[in-house]
Amino acid sequence: MITIQEAKTKNELIEFIKFPFALYKDNPYWVPPIIADELETFDKTKNPAFNSAEANFYIAYKNNVMAGRIATIINWDEVNYQQKKKVRFGWFDVVDDIEVTKALLEKVYELGLKNNLEYVEGPMGFSNLDKVGVLTEGFDELGTMITWYNHPYYATHFEQLGYVTEKEYVENKFPFANAKPEFFERINELVKTRYQLKPINFKSTKAVMPYVDKMFDLFNESYANLSSFVAISDIQKEYFKKKYISFINPEYIKYVEDKNGNLVAFAIVMPSFSKALQKANGKLFPFGFLHLLNARRNSKDVVFYLIGVHPDYQNKGVTAIIFNEYHKTFTEKGIENCFRTPELADNIAIQLLWKNFNPVVHCRRKTFRKAL
Image 1 (cartoon, rainbow, N blue to C red):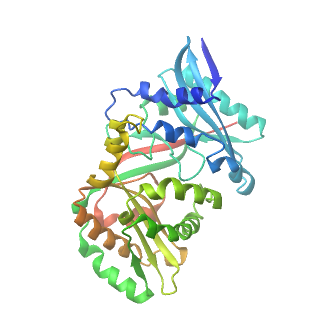
Image 2: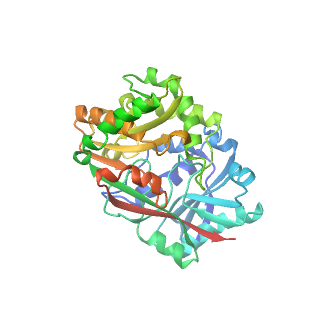
């Protein structure tokens, strides 16, 4: 017998968060989140995503044993301003039982139909800065802190239930040795001179902070034309600033300014925390934070998290300035491998940025869609 229970209390939400810890126990590729961080994400009083979204969290039980979980989400900015009549689902995990998957998805349909929405898409989070997609290739690749891992049968369940591919994402990697400076050093100098641009590097988080609001504004401008994009609000900017910026090595944040002090490009790279998070196993204390601190200082792998260029400067070689600065930083730190977060497979412009680094696709993921 399958029953579905909504997780509302703190203890119920902790049970919701801990389900994949059991599902992927001893899996060498799954990267666990920090439980306290997930709890904050689901807290309507702390996460500003709830100012423009609503979400419910459900747990499935089969014969009184936990068998799955799902979050049902409506991003009202997406519905009201972009006229996308979509109900989302995310934080989806399930045992290999399609009846459990079907029962969980019924809660998504209920929310969508109740609000006169037209279709379902997932898995995805509240916004563009959340995790996205079900893994379809790369099950033997170590995940990252900003992607979901899953078993191969997830996509099979969706397809058997009549879902179709909505968006496909690719994740690339390349050894740092592939970053040959001759590909961007000359262009870097030409672009700086022609457009009167200069790179900005940082040694402290305090020095980064005055630029962060400009960076989020530029992020919104850079990605505005993507069909799936929902802009980050001012309240969300403050939230992400406090939650994440201090977590990132300041020397891994690069900005490019014009002669008038306007920000025209930015990039954020993070050290890989995957192995540290596996050691922490969901807990910061007593030793989890030490594993994360060690990774922040000493990881030889890095993850390109975000890169944005103002529309007026796109296709003008500005990224050569960013790559040149990262090459100097990564050389100093002895970086060995570079990974990229999920990028839309049809975003040819972003793919072309990396062509000279000879990247290889090591993971693919999709969101799936179904009409209500």
